[in-house]
Image 1 (cartoon, rainbow, N blue to C red):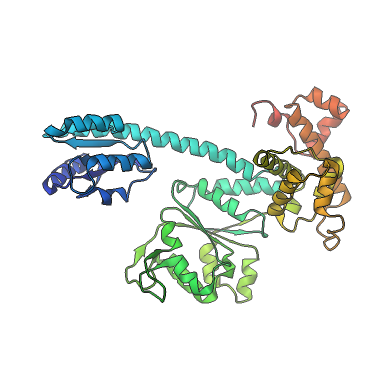
Image 2: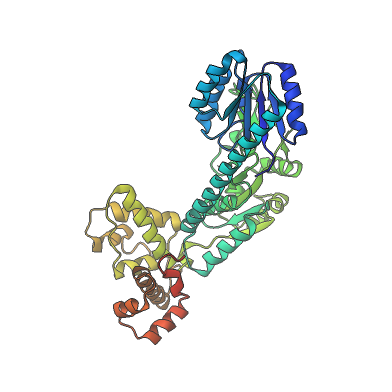
Length: 459
């Protein structure tokens, strides 16, 4: 966040706007002046980093109405009202309604500066505290969304940590349902653009005739049915991140237009003549090999290299071992809270069935099955078998893990659950699993489990 405040100065008196605006600019504030309140409101939202300074008596929307509009967007935006001698009672009422302060005309410029300085300091602290809270919430949320101890997930989190804070264009490759949008949002949240929009568009779901308008927007009359102005996805993502999902499905004849936008960093709406500069970060994704799409003549190679400064491969669920059980438990508990139903613990047979399932739908399929597991009325031992339907995996023998892998995943899960249940108390774990201390130590080392990760209050 910039250390320099934005000052929105609203006054219908032009000479007042000029003199006060110049004084504030000389004091290193970024000043935007407005002759009426409605125009100023267009630039005020919850992320507004500054102070609103407004006259009370103005034609149209007066200072009192402006105050209510600003506070409706964020009650903690400081609004300083400038009053005439006869407006003191009104200004006091405004203070009761949430105005930061008021200054009576004629006023000492130094008094205005001091009032703005205090107001901005308060606003800056509020925004910093919000940002810290957002980061903490995001850290917890991302940890939940990217659950897993498998080597593939550990590598994925490292790549997000490395690439997130940069503005590098990232290309995500992964099967349908493996969480490409979750990873894209995590990259956005790890960046300096996290307070700005994250706009996602599925390039394979838009009719070709509407694609250009959807991305670039249009002016009234640009084509039959274009009755008003439309802001496209590129503009909506201004300052933030644009996520182009299934980008290799983009119509080939439009790929060159997207390439030109990325090269020039500006767009033109359909039917328009004005070049509009854009400041966005691009994250793209595909469920197929983009290089093969280029070789097949479906995707422009120059566009691929423009989008692919860095490439992240998201592991399919079937390769993530005991992460499957961890994710199932997470989704089942979340479903239990949503539907106010219990989530019975998995039996050993159910765990083995989950680990053996080929998961063609990846995490999306797992989440769906976990929800169905919670809401069905069947007895717990029968639930998962009824949902998975024995025999449905016959067409995918190559995808299932081997017997030794299933046993290893199951063993790791049992030890991990015991460690979690007993919050890292090794003696309690030894007693529950009926294992010698040396055997438990070897198995924890084999499966990459550390006692410190399960201590009460630990990570």
